[in-house]
Length: 150
Image 1 (spheres, rainbow, N blue to C red):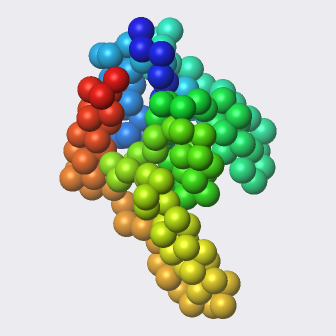
Image 2 (image 1 turned 90 degrees about the vertical axis):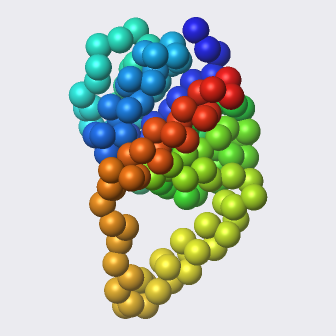
């Protein structure tokens, strides 16, 4: 079994992405932990588990930061969470298969803050589009690259 593990910010992780993760964990024998404030349907496996946390702002994020170690992979769209785990030496993939890295996280935090400022001043900025089949493939390919690098 691999020593690195995968952590999932599961409250907002799409079901299709979780299914890709379940298959990958079994295929390469890597531990997969989903952290959420609600029950998540898991595939029965000794490699896959859930940590359910209390509801509240950043409770799941704080739990991920507490457990993650260098070399682990975190699946999240949460940019501040990504910044925290990158600082601990973890790798980050979004459910769209985009890598968050030391090189790009600063710019992404600035853009997030800018968009939040626009929204708080009444500007409607819209939200992200739903995941497409192309996004699923991009995620699966990026996950495979990470797992191969182990």
